[in-house]
Image 1 (tube, rainbow, N blue to C red):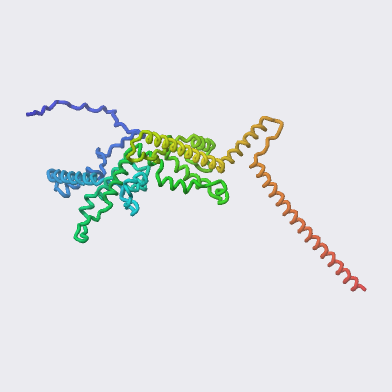
Image 2 (image 1 turned 60 degrees about the vertical axis):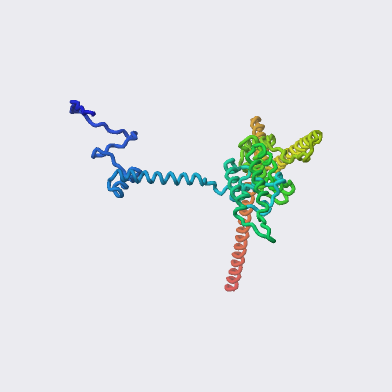
Length: 403
């Protein structure tokens, strides 16, 4: 058993000239309380535990510990249940259209795999975790065994008929969509010809220079969505945006330099023709592969040319290019005339317009002043004529009175 040992230690007496140290203004420590204790604020977990111990458990620590343990277990079960449910924010909850449900699994290359899994709003941005969640939901909803057990069969002319005619077909579409979207290479090929992308591309890229000018379209509202649509295919990220009217010369040049040298990962293997079923001819396979390779190269070339044409069109209609050229011209002229000390510097276009405006205002003010002077002189002349006329009349009256 441990024993307590008392040491005979006596604290030394403080000297008479000793003074307690004062905390500096820069110290982060608060000054001691006058009573010798720090002020405790009634907040925090410790204070709440103290209130529970005093009000609900009458200062009984065993009762308080048992209650705390029960709460901890209940919280752990709740968190486990929430983790099992997995908050997926509605991933895969999209309702299938009748057209989607009627898809033929043999035509799997023509189906929209994102729509099949209920990921239409995510599409190429869908993460592997979201694809996994959506697939699990669709399997639970459309599995043929579950459908067969939930839908009663109908008896027609004494024959038991299963009403789940297309469940197995759509389930195969679900499995194929999951297979494509979980394979990085196949998903890249599908994203290259995503039907939603192609539809949007046809809607917004048919603009021409004449249409733009005739309809008086807004430059940034028209072309910003086009480059935002194509930026998904860039190997280099992030992709510079079109920007705004107040963009600097460096930003504008950087944008066009990036898009003129656009490095796209887009490919067209998804549109390859399959070798005829049942054909074992190596010549037939080689011919098909050669044809597919040629078609892929053609489509890639057309895609590159189309994007280059859009960049050319954007550059030709960009209002910032005209402003940059005007600023460069003014800077060159200012530098040129600055090199000739005896010759006055040529004024910029803005300065010339300002001077023209000022001269027009001065001419207008001068004209108004002259008009006022003419009116004043006219009034003075009329007043003098009236005064002379009045004087003559008074003179005649005086002459007639003396006569």
